[in-house]
Length: 110
Length: 116
Image 1: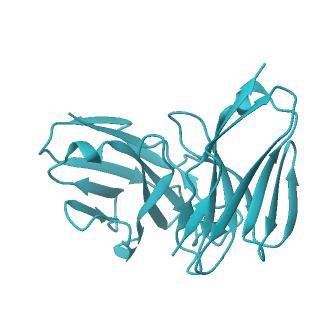
Image 2: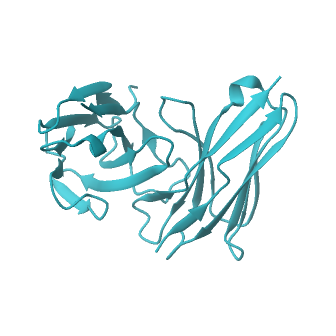
């Protein structure tokens, strides 16, 4: 089966850094995705990790450790517009569907 | 290059009616996926289709729900005899190949179904 865990909610201050952790247990692994979703909108793709290590993209970075079944999304220099839900998703062995965690709602305060 | 198009954006149905949700994938994408998102929850996989083929429907409820992706036209998710518990956001996504891809899916804006 598939099981993906991430915190429900996090609060941080504008300009600060927030790290959203995601742990997963899946039958097969073909990559881990992070998506951003604003309320009432579609998820938008942020990052994809298939090998261990850190991928950096501007203010956002994503890390993967396959041996630990662990990933994190790091958001730096937080802006008010970063207030959203962040979804961790894993592509299983067949690679034809994603299993999502429940999402982490991040609230950025002034 | 239009993205994934879903319509309608909002759909209200009375209990017992049928709901038909449409999804046109991005140009050049031949793989379509449907996901359901209940309020305050993550997305749950429902079905994966290619043209004229259902590849994986392991997430579809056994009754009342069906999906198709015909040779011509959009993919359709049909919910018969809707109940209040069907109220959710239904997202469609498309990809050129399977999801083992650095670009992942492209999601549509979703259809928000409300059953009254």
